[in-house]
Image (cartoon, rainbow, N blue to C red; front, side, top):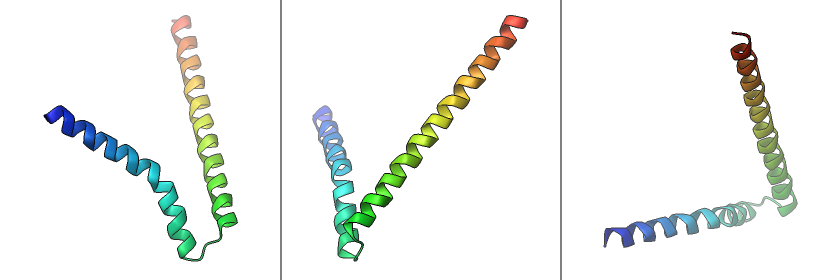
Length: 74
């Protein structure tokens, strides 16, 4: 019985996560924010997240190459 309640909680959490963006858009629309502004802000947020991910990836790759060079020289 516990396994079933866990899957129900998991399913509810997934459904809530999927509904969050739509709820945010609806709420901001009711507050008077235009849809084009929401799209621009969402696009800028997505670009910022992608740039942050790439910078993090490049830093991680540079550190691993640096550590590999150190271990080869030792």
